[in-house]
Image (cartoon, rainbow, N blue to C red; front, side, top):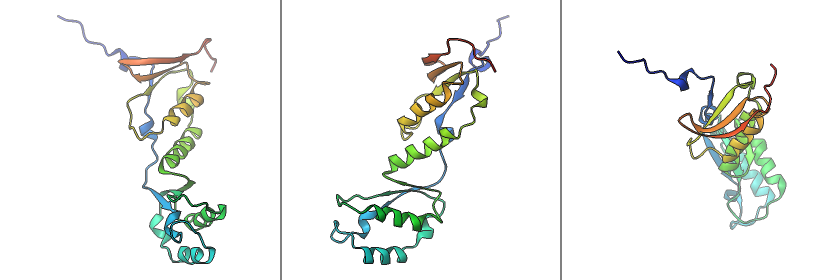
Length: 173
């Protein structure tokens, strides 16, 4: 009779963390300020304001929005602010920048609001090889949030992990 196979990973206190599980759900979209520029470079206030009044802002309901300008035009700061004032009643979140900037912002918010209680004094495995669209900066922010409470930090998978950090002294509860 052979001995039973024991799954040491499943029985370990190791807590697996996958940033993909924390991805805010909802459509992402860019509002391009270049759409309202004359000849792609000039923003005239009166026509700009009129165009914004005519826009159907409800189409951004429950969207994550990045306000960006694909033109090399130098725009007044109030242009993005005015667009924001129209988006605010509908959009979930609005940032100035690209979709990548939006994603970094969303993950920064998720990580900043993370309840650290389940991770206190535990060995933590941060899953590697996740969605390539996850911002790399999110991993940096996650480490900064978790390290003060964790027992140890690893990156990768349980079968092939990279040790990142280990507490020198056992922390008290």
